[in-house]
Image (cartoon, rainbow, N blue to C red; front, side, top):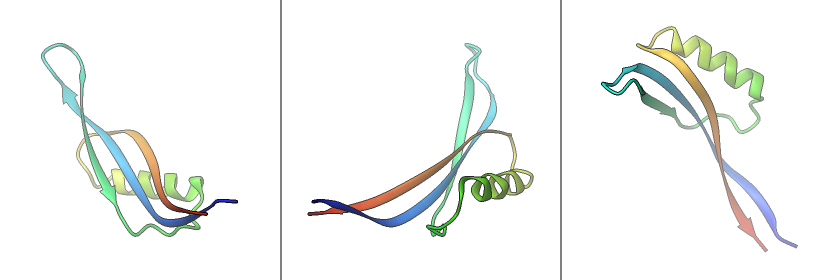
Length: 72
């Protein structure tokens, strides 16, 4: 039976930096590596809110990106 071993976790913050000529939002992102694998969704959201205060633009989305190795 195959198993997935969690290798890395990254936190990605997406900001709305403005609106283009067609009325679509301009999105910019910032990714933070070396996030602890044990972090909960609530902890990551709180960290994202604290970081967003220091950045330009409105926080649009918070993503958690996990990478796993599949072994069999």
